[in-house]
Length: 389
Image 1 (cartoon, rainbow, N blue to C red):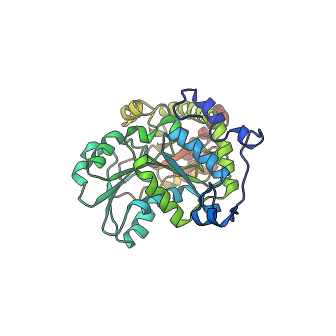
Image 2 (image 1 turned 45 degrees about the horizontal axis):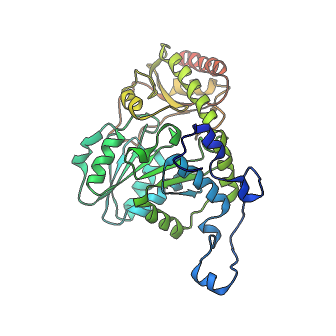
């Protein structure tokens, strides 16, 4: 399907990435397990003048997924890597060298911070964190050696909204590459490249996979950055396995209807939580009460199933009591799957965006269960927190 096709998103998801007529009419693409690829003659082998040359350089399976992601992102090319964290690491390694300066939003995904503070620092990259609300004022932090500006909107766990177009405009004026972790919204609800971002990163483990049983990451680049990103991908050899790629490609077909359910259920529950006296604050960008709501409304076309709450006048004891009382919600990391999850948020790694949250923060992943059952489960948790207090 052509990238300019104006059909609805669920139609595009259902038909993108693989043309059944290319493989005997089968609806899904073949799962190609490949390392060695044979050449018909020595000249073809010497010049590599055939589409597939070795397993790390692409297969019909990886092409199907990457083509589908390109259509969603409007990108020049996409790579598929073994995890969401690998999707963070590859573009940073592609565009940063010793002596460079990178700006990273302080509300970033913690493993991204760990990679920056350890490996990037050891490789001689100057790492600096900035406040998520900085917008165009990021101009004052730009240096002659600033090569990358890393964004994540909404922010991890606390959901601060960034003014992505303003930040990208400043970065481009200084010759820096803007990268964005867009896992929360997916390209269904926000297309980073349309807003000036150069490279869009996704933990496809989350909504594209959708069933908590696969690890995968994708990185999509515009035309200016694609060749360098792709060359680094080939150099590092971090290709994802065909079975994982296939599962995510299959998951894409239903991501639209699943994400719509996640969104509606999460908003219903978030609005209900706003009226609970045990909850000091609900951190959900789609709520008018949220500080970054205006940016969300301006730039995003939807919201997903992940948000946080702050328990009123409570501490760790009450937070643990809340979590331990849950029965439908599981206690576990990650999100985007069919099941609801809860986790006690740790903010001790922040440097400039510490915030004053007046109580413990609980992150909720709203799955595909009935909202009434999830609300009843949260009520049990709130009652347990009250008793513990």
